[in-house]
Image (cartoon, rainbow, N blue to C red):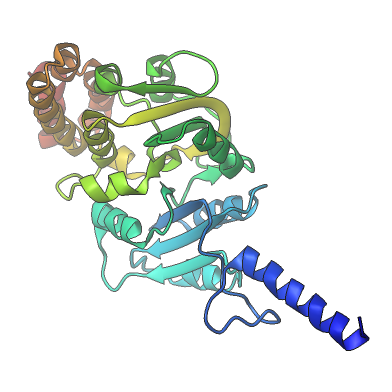
Length: 333
């Protein structure tokens, strides 16, 4: 083979190699920034509205994955400071896309937008203040390969504080007690799963891997600001879905004072939403003949205990409406 032919053949092989890595697309120019492949296994959607330092750490934790079979899409919900977005756009990484909404959508509508932008069979809606450990993508891919057809994956999670230090607040200790016991990746479904979730939501929403078609079918509810994840989990469960729980810690959930759930606890609004949700799913479970799950919804004891822990803060703030809402949730039907 002549030298020019050899060079041409090498060039063709290089081009095909890049196309396998990044996907064939119009205007493909190997020497410049390539169009990123469209067949990645996992889309990581990151709704953004929060602290720059936490956001930067979250994005960098995705970039540090030891398996690059992912696409990251940042959906900025019109955060007043544009510096985080400028930083994201400056990364120059074809695996990272940045979008700024034209108006503030608030959580549920922004989650819906994230789902509409998803291209893959499975998706993560990651918090902009949380952290993936380097093996997150690799591990969830292993779980999905071992459990074809799984609707949701809950990987192993540790909790970190505002500064990124591992800690164990009482609420998360209770979650660990409520989480189904066992070792390795294990599957739950049906009334057993519904009863477990209604007894106390032991999952961590930003770490969950969802089947995209489930999120498109059921849709995040616009009447909920805080417990839309539990509503989605239960909708999928009542529809015959299967959830896989794993123990290998590959995700760090950040627990801090400015999170939505922390802010809406003392004023009682979070628990008002939970109360309505439990009443709804009590009815739906009874209609399916799932008496034990309906009983768990009626009792919702872990939610009542959580509301009780918020009472001191409500008393200190002299929030009469919040205090009444919390007392109703703790002692009411």
